[in-house]
Image 1 (tube, one colour):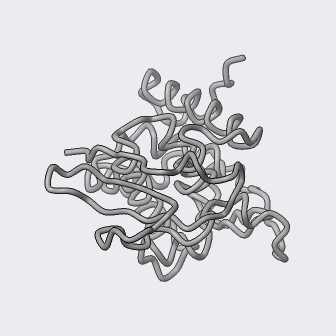
Image 2 (cartoon, helix red, strand yellow):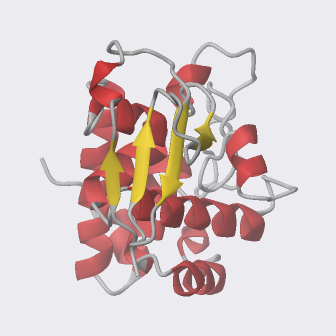
Image 3 (cartoon, helix red, strand yellow):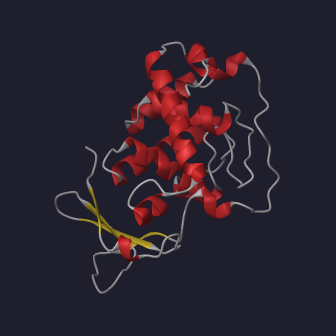
Length: 215
């Protein structure tokens, strides 16, 4: 069952503030978030600072753009994608869409922000998702899919907020009460949704991966 989510006091944070996020889950399974801990002992630290990859822009890393052009890469990880999607109850098409947009199925890709691997995990996200080798394709897929499950739980199954959280961090989505007003994140949500639709409607992952995006 996907947990519900409630926001408490997040609108009081200045736009773009990197406040800590606190949370607790009540007896009905509703997750409550706030950026002000206050005196309520039920709230525990959920996320330190901003979280997401935008906070890492400008980090001193050596980017490695996707360079694998083999057609086989679109089916090479089928078994692990299916296993992770089934384990974490995330649509297989969504896992594939995130991999396509993030790395174009190249496990060696590294972004300018330091995100790595097929699902482009930051080191701190990999640590949270308990993966030791972020460049291992299987571990990366399982960790990225687990993070999608965490986001889907936090945002009551809302697909767009889940995707936005994957790019900008759940803290930014909580602070803004929706998709953050970052052009990068807004473009990212649109691209992932377009790829998600392709993978849902085109059974062949190779054909779906090579199909041009819509306008």
